[in-house]
Amino acid sequence: MSTTADSTETTETVEKQNTEKSAESTGKAEKRKRPENVDFTGSKKKKWEDPNKKVDPLEELPMNVPFKIVDGVRHLSPYWACYRTRTKGRWIGRKMVEVFSGEFLSTNRNYAKKIWGFEDDISQEMTKLLKRGEEELIELIEEVVCKSGRDFAQLCTFIFGKKPEIKVMEYQELEKIACKMGRIYVNGEQMTDTDYVLKNGDRVDHWAHRHEHPVRDLPIRIISDTDDLLVVEKPPSLPVHTCGQYAIHTVLGQLRVNEGITGLRVLHRLDRATSGVLLFAKNYETDLEFKTTLKQGEWSKEYICKVDGVFPDEEQICDQPIGPLVISMGIQCVRPDGKEAKSRFKKLWSDGTHSVVQVHIETGRTHQIRVHSQFLGHPIVGDQLYNSTVWGSTKGKNAEYQKSFEELCEDVRNTHKSENWHEKPNPEYEQRMEHLAADSTEITTETPGLTVDQRPEFDEICQKCNVESKKVPDNHYQLFLHCLKYETPKWCFKTELPEWAVQK
Image (cartoon, rainbow, N blue to C red; front, side):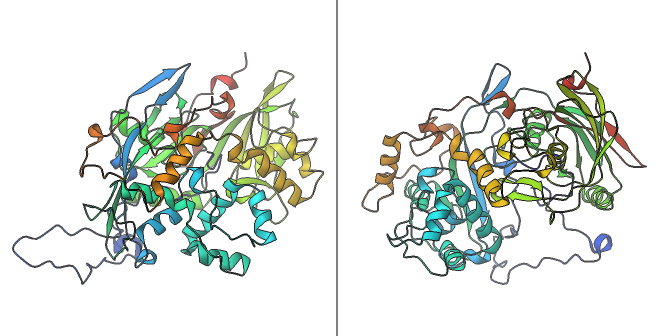
């Protein structure tokens, strides 16, 4: 569930705005043309909808979802949400169920166990990959499929040199069941045909039961609010924008629900467990201006972190290059072929066991402060990823891992693979899902056009409704890393020190 930690490098905005960039401001904008196959004649004209328009996922979510607070943790009740999309070029002519199960893999492990359904003569290479962890392989395949547009069979041929004999793919079962139940709509009409082939311009809506991860019940403090810019102090445990099982429980989601603020453009990101200064643009011009200055290195970025041990009194500069270790998990490490990175550390105080350190970063690599503090021998207190002996007896100090890079990658992957903490569905649920997915099983189609209020609180095909949730450890919610100040010669935004950074 982690996202980019202390990276401040430019990111794409969460939603693509409808307003097109003018030719005067960019010199490159092109006017979009209406498709030739759309009939705009006749006495009753329909409003033309741009098939390339991306829907803001937050607009599809309910505003008043009940929640409860237990021991300072906010638990959101499950709710129904409609996922909307338009047919992409590479989907045309393919079965809807095949496309959706391939490009939008279910988090339900029951439908991701046998990705290709290989026959018994599966290659040794594939066996080795599967043993490395189903979840990691799935994530890697999903990433490649989304970027390349290949279907799974093509990707298998690309990786293993042969095309597998594909049986009934278990990862398609959830989409088949949802389709048979009438939860998928094409162009506003309920679609129960599991063999439906997507056409150019199809609009597909999919109703699904959504469970969100819990977060700390902490306010989002507004630092500055102008016509062009919104600056907030992000609390720990909230992702910046919709990702995975976070939507309402995000900074953008909470600003929408509690403050009525929408249409924001993300200028940079902070990791879910990181707190501090977070900037949003309110229009394209401000978005372009701030991202340009960020790219040009004009932002001064100051962080505070709490690390293990007594940090040296003298300023410590770490300029070790950073690159990926486990791509599918976003875990980084110091490596010679990594990207240039530079951090300056200065101790503020120490209690003899831990130290609070000020950090200025001149670059914005993924997990930069976490990786560099680990290299210096003072990893961030409680950091689940980088403060562990899986990196060696000295926890990765000086990049001395006491094992090969391949062994390190394998050990770190196995330590943090999601199957270690995922809940397991009960056997009855898995048997029921296999039965419902069978072509011979007839399912009663739900009434078309059901509203959110008419849908049940418990969903029989929802995996999260059929598991017992595990208690989330406290260090999952907060990383002792805080973005204290961002500034340029033109502006400066900062927060007070977090409570854990104040010397008692």
